[in-house]
Length: 316
Image 1: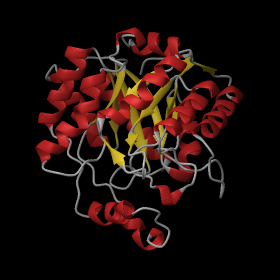
Image 2 (image 1 turned 60 degrees about the horizontal axis):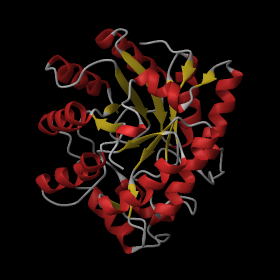
Image 3 (image 1 turned 180 degrees about the horizontal axis):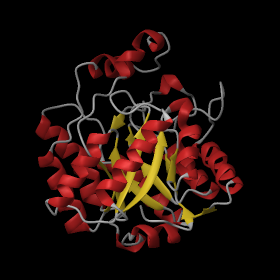
């Protein structure tokens, strides 16, 4: 693992798994996404990770016109690194899904994009009985019901395309999202093929159904495996879902990782207390980091650490 004097905080604004019925504070419109992201950046986040939602009802969308409504204002108002997802859920044939998921990253060529390292089985359907009487929009019920039969596609064919068209051709730096130990081996494989090159920004993810749980020994096993595969050719970051967010990223930070927070990953700012914004979570982890005598990276320091192309070289 590459050591750094500064800790990079990533804030993930809204994601695609949480639904409006789960929190009144979840950013849904472009304007809300902008304000949440700016507050997180002001609180200390160097990277803002972004998904898009349909303004009228908050349904996840891949519409480039919606992305444009918040990407341009954010670039004008913050120096934070903009990171666009390549994992936005979409319904249709595998070909349609892939085209939709890559439409915004290919058009806007941001400094960073997420890069999922294997298939996933999202499980909103497991919440159906708990949330069915609280839904605000029809799509929420359909989303939960359909997720039982859905697998998020992340084939090697798709990985090769992402690596070539975003990394090689557009100079995008990747946040390699690893939900399981096997995802690290998938990254090692595509690196061996020459599709991606070190140093890798490895985002170790815990607490999502279908991936590793939030046990500390899983976190250490993830780090040990990454050390074995990549040596000092990677930067390490940690995120965790729900109530275990702060505990897991604190363990990670204490052992050398960067950290990610935000309403995409957790809706909470303490036991039984909904976060009013992603900034609530940035402030909490910043306090922890400073108590550990760790310094927070600015956006430009994060650019230097990760080697991004700079905000002037994006297409928005």
